[in-house]
Length: 260
Image (tube, rainbow, N blue to C red; front, top):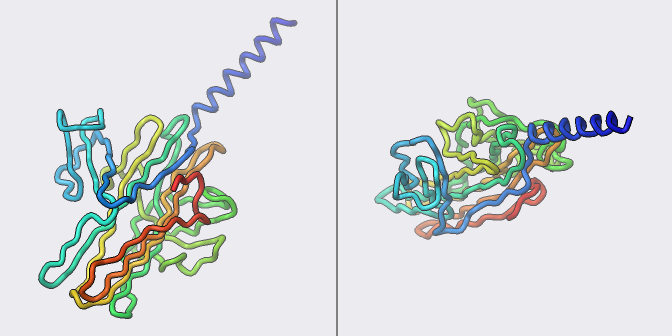
């Protein structure tokens, strides 16, 4: 009788362990945003001439052990005044720390934005679909994200696309592993990492323009494991003949396990 009890207990332990390793959880997420720094992405895929990042391979790598290393700029990383069309880019890098089987976690990004120029609201770009998050508390307790993944639609307007505080509306912004041929994303044991670089451009130096972005970068755990979400606003004010003023601000209401 004693032997049988021990055997049953041992079987229970084995079953619990197999369940744990079949799941994935996100224990923390951070966002790199300091101007002048870089986000390093390790990739076995050669993206060729990825013009916004520096590709390193072989002995030129400094961090990665996989085939290629990409050093991507974050913060305000370019400024082009030109003769007629001033442009700049504003980057950020996301790193999520995972436990368990990373392939069981899903990742993505949500976005709402508003662009204005000389007092007029401009047309937002089209949605770049991601994995739908769905469900109350799927990423953030008490919040149900209303995610539009229709690529024929424009991104919803900032700040929450006409939704409510507990049911905000966003457009999908990709950054899922399944589309790694289209976006620069890394998946290694214990982490997901990706990078984004927003574009701002105005028709002429004298234009008074502004950009308001609200991002939610997220990784969803599986089988009841924790999820991560870092929500933040990027504000760009670019007055006539002036340098652009760019700020990043966390939105704690739509964040979970976020190390801002």
